[in-house]
Image (tube, rainbow, N blue to C red):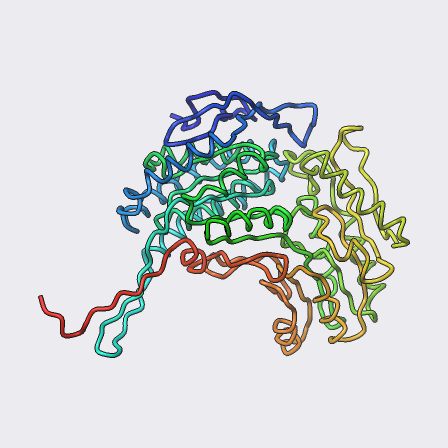
Length: 494
């Protein structure tokens, strides 16, 4: 029997998806709704989704607080058993999840099926394993036996973005659950449906009521009510720096630890001694998912002596991209998420053109899909100078910039010249230069001669306005835990 049953549901790509919140193990409807439409065809309304408010937020936090003692007392083994059942169900239902997320967010369905959604299952398994494998620090000093323990913290709010919503939700929720916390997930209103399915899978896996909750709605409404609740013990957010400021103020009011991943403006540095063909191919790949990837290397910085050769190769690979329906295997460039976002991205390009920046390719909306189509041509801009808006601000669309540098010091200067610091990509044939660049570039992750190779135990996060804190591995489990120092006098007897 499919777990996708019960409550108010709509058919999305042949899958029955609940449009209600999931609170305390039950589906809860709101009296008001918001529309959810498909980027593949904006005339298609996928669902009217329950629109949470302050009352909904209160119900969810209340349910999470009530469920916390039992979930915390289950211990890492008991929680891990439930989480592994969730992982198995994710693997089992990848085709259904992919069909829904493709329609809701427009990520390539083939990529979702073959790569992205299985990462959700890996997140649940990996954090269940890491929590069980934790070695308490034990030592003797000053006549005492000492131990450092992890304690579950309590109710946690997780707020996730609209890009890759299912995978990114599991990336945050899995460590919180493994640490013994209860979770209220608030997905982005532009792509909420696959997170509703995650609630079904957690329910089917036997997760106790109230341990995992999903609240849908508008950020300024239900999201603001959630993060202001004094019963919370942790808040985790991925999104924009402006929204993070509001959440950070609410967290500070109640002295709640807060982690935030806030996007990037990654440099893609190419030295003359690198494999230029490999570098150009990877650079053209930064248009994947219509550039709606926070880790993308959007600032191409190429050594001046190979400028023309690199551009020739880059255009050749970029020309091979196919804009089309995300459900079709031949498509490599999907539509963007929402008309508002297309307008925002187009505004950056229009202002760059007016500023005197040079459009090297693209620079306009695609005619695909007609007047309502959400495709934008892969665009490359050579700015007049490094202060150009398109260099200094995250665009989050299929728009890259192109600049040249003279030497290694100049490359480092340009790479570190924005307020962001999430990720960087460096292509070079020199091991010693790779080491120097890895140390000199200010970013949470630096890839050399590769991109998007992820180890779930590694730290993930950004510098500057790219974020606060680190996710991944024990770094995430430590954030979602309270650390306890336990001391016993060594001559204590029974």
